[in-house]
Length: 410
Image (cartoon, rainbow, N blue to C red):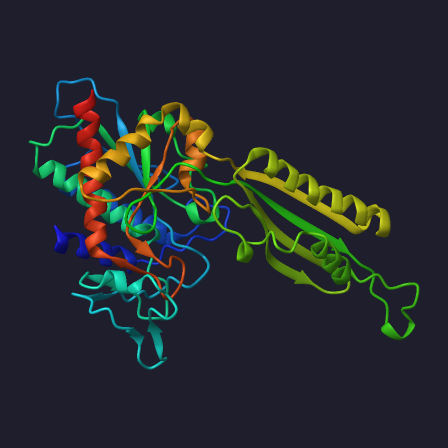
């Protein structure tokens, strides 16, 4: 199974599937469709049934039940795209057998080194088989590891009919990294009662709480006049933008928060005297605190409008997704089963909130309660991303055990 898993994963990551938030198509990039079509053929080849791909690149397939019991239909999902933060083109995965715990030279020419000095968790992987980047791209374990693990688990169940399970649905979705993964996902066609995204990080992660999330775009209009004759005439939009940002609590930013703490995150600044735009994301686990954050953005906007005029400041704010805990807690047994599955496989479950987004947040509000389980990856979205194959195998085992437990408890 190990070789099979490595071959799957390393073949997937070589396909450039970075999503593009500026594209209006679904999927937002051609590479995602390339991988989706490849997966369709692979699903058919391993013996999955009802394999489909729609016009938007959503892949679905079925593993029929092999038990007479009435078992809830469960699903496993992973996303096709990789992050936009760092290049995912020309990925060259490096497989390191029996990692010795010492710093890993990712790229000798550029002196790019993965070491415990920067990443203290690295020594715990001594003895593992690791897959790393070559230091010039991200790896794409987020979320091609999840795809490889789901595919390998389905192939294993097909080869081992003695493991009893109910009907299982799998899906691979586009554009999760730009927040659009479930936007065109057909929950009714998926026809599962519960699902799991296989999109977490290190071994044992089990998540059923996510942020409440919103985006905010501020546009500031100025008035440019030659600086030599600007007195009483110039209005500098960049300075108004700076004033806006200064009114937000400086400690409530990603670099100063953890756990259940929310934040305002300034993700881009563009502008000059005439016009400046600020783009933020707003995050909080508590719905009331989330609302208070949005109200603060509006309050500051209103204050600046009073100072500089209503036409000088424009706020566009939109909710993106909500804390999936509200939809999963009523069916908490699906989290409990995942917890038990990990323990049965000798894995210590780490239940924690997701400080980020997941398709499960939106899917849970679309009627498909969907917690998240680990893939085994570390340092997602950058050149130092890597994954333990040993822990990928543990993820495969967890998927198989979840399917088995649903049947056993039916």
